[in-house]
Length: 205
Image (cartoon, rainbow, N blue to C red; front, side, top):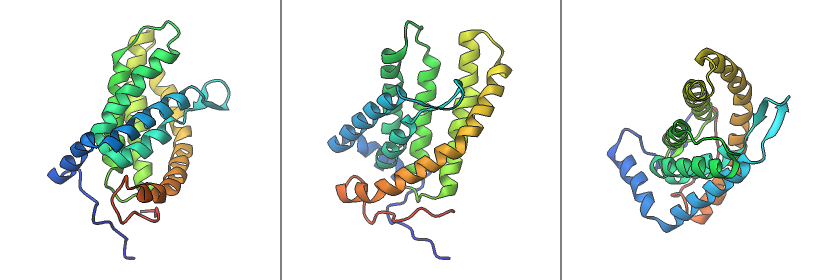
């Protein structure tokens, strides 16, 4: 089956991709969107929904981060990720010490979101791969290391609990990302925030 592609699709391995992503930092509308995405993500972090008991809860900040990264790419997304982490800590730390490891995770997450979404043809498979890298690479592998350093329990303890939690959340996060992006693609196109022609569907592959 012939796949609809956009002339604006770029490979992250090309110089044109990074030139385009870097140019976003000089766009006033892009920076405004980055600020809005950061603000929305911080607010959404404050209102998680508990899915199963007090430990399994889902934060919806990833939705704002995903839409933003689709528009402005990995460089701006890394900056926005760092802002989200710092501001979120200031609002909800409750006297806990600041740990820079989570800032590194937030910046790395912004890079991953940008690489998977910016100037790419969206598909369900791509969104699944995105969540696999974020959930198990950043949240579990790195997050468990930071928690072990902070709270003293062994790395395997946090790794095990993190694997269970992120595995359960993965299909929910993929579905929500899919729904929001399908809704937002036409809006982003009409607003001029992404190049035309705008992708009109999200296929499986």
